[in-house]
Image (cartoon, rainbow, N blue to C red; front, side, top):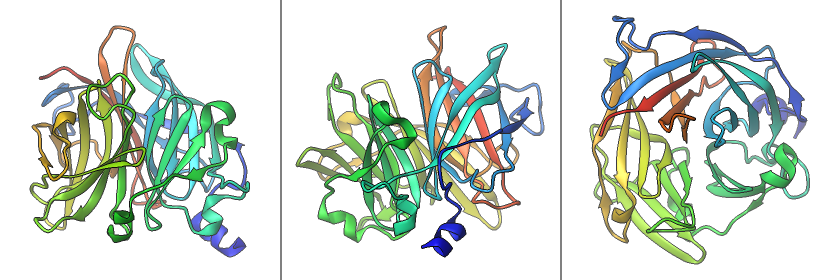
Amino acid sequence: APATAQSIRFPAAPTRIVVNTTPIDSFDLRDASRTRFGALEFRGGFTMRSIHRAFGGISGIRMAADGASFVAVTDRGGWFTGRIEYRDGRPAGIADAQIAPLLAAGGQPLAAQGWFDAESIARDGDSVYVGLERVQKIVKFDFGGHGVAARGAPIAVPPDFKSLSFNRSLECLAAVPAGAARHAGGLIVVTEASLDALGNIRAFVLRGREVTRFAVARHDDFDVSDCALLGNSSLLLLERRFTRTTGLTIRLRRLSLPTFRNGAVADGPVLFEADMGYQIDNLEGLAVHRNAEGETILTMVSDDNFSGLQRNILLQFALVGP
């Protein structure tokens, strides 16, 4: 266990860290004056670095209603929390940063028992759900009462999860609020690229013992990297594709919750797409909040895979298009 713990680099205990940031002032590498990209308007961003070896691999994020406080998970089994500082309405830095291990019910780090590949996060009030690839588990934490000291317990999942692709599964979680017209109180699960017989992406809505099994149409070999609810009736789906010839491309689609029905294939319009000509990296986290002006703000974060060849970046956009 100690050797495993060291190799996967999860934080051993809650630790305050300093996150150094470098501004990303323009999104288009070829035209610094451009701010509109599809349905999104670029509002700013930065790269993030820390000397702590457990920092990195950010794979999911949720923003608080204040648009500053956040909770994120890493693919090494850790929490990353803090507060985004703004300057003239643009994200400028990270304050009060902390990393901590995801804890099992007995108090030991989940990563020490091999449950470390945290790829998705959803929040419903005080409850935080974390999706773990490889073991195909969803763990629930009482985060509001205990914060990063919360101990998690797996929730019941359908037996279908055992057939999901080993490392291409629980990439998207979203908790549907009680007031939604469809799937209220449910937990949406969209896999990264666990495909059905027709080549579409397998997906679920878990609502108590009720399970809705549907699929998301897969286009152009894009895989799912995260999702976030947009109001009570839409789901924003963050996608990525990597090829040796074109490199990395990321994309954002909007799906309608009422189309998430048993046996259905959900699809929706592309709102945004960016390739290596833009300030992107391995974007794996997506969150939505509304700012003081009533604008819908999207926050995206990247997973550097603990590699010196990749970056941890944070980007923010306003949703201004249809």
